[in-house]
Length: 383
Figure 1 (cartoon, one colour):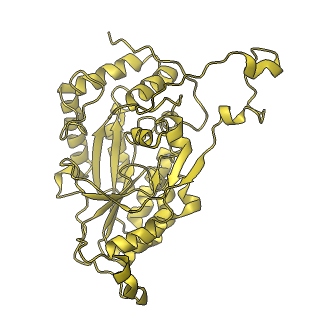
Figure 2 (tube, helix red, strand yellow; figure 1 turned 180 degrees about the vertical axis):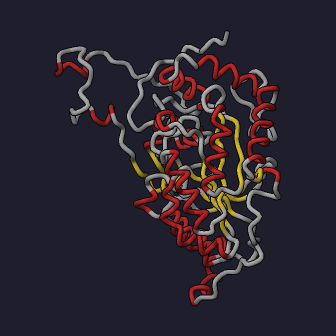
Figure 3 (cartoon, rainbow, N blue to C red; figure 1 turned 90 degrees about the horizontal axis):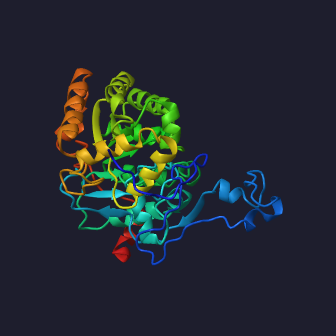
């Protein structure tokens, strides 16, 4: 029998994924919230907080705070041997979608914030990213290779509707004839369909919609502010109709929770017009292990032990294995079964396994060229 760790209990918050704001791993002090009775003194002692009370609404429904990220570079480089790109752009740090399983949550600890609720309520935005990207792409020593977006946090999270940073980045990439691949959980990508269709006509753009489940109720708990599954499939259809190559990522596959839906997701995606497919087995690095365990105990206490037991079966007895080559797929009989099921189902519905291809995109890098504009004369002073 799988023994669950003794974690402090939380309560689900409407529109939020994490059920606590766990202290990040770099902090010297670990903080726990307790009720000593004084917070409710004016409401008759131990009476639960009233969600309509403006004095407590921030605690009951934490708001999203936007912070300007004073980054000096738009591009992030990596040398990881098991991912098919070496550069990416993340317009935002943190993600309001609130996916409880998100492997990017631990990055908020570097900022002195919690990978829990802070990750989905304290978002760092990069409004200067398009301008910085122009400078980086204009350098004489820049060599073009496809840029990936959505590899860490979603470029079409709700804030994008207001800030349009992703759209600004796409305009720059289009001007430079630079290829890009996008992964998102949002039908907000359709706001940029004009740019994406134009770039796709030049073989410069591909989009992948990440679909974890087709169950709307489960999706609301698992990824509360991401688009509903039906909207993501509708986005697949709209992109395909506009001539944008589109694929689906079944990500993550969660043992004993979403794994039974893999074939249904692939069939629905193919029916909507997807051409390619990939999957990632659930990853639980660093603080995500406890956050996900806590979420399971709150939302699915009857399945928690089974889910975590199967996760350990795929991770060498642990809840996570960060080894290159294994971190995306896992190991052991259960992981092998998931891989076999995916391959059979993808072939049956005519989807290309994106991992079997050269890189993630197959996009055209030969068109790349800085635009010839008067502003280019000033590039000398920006090097």
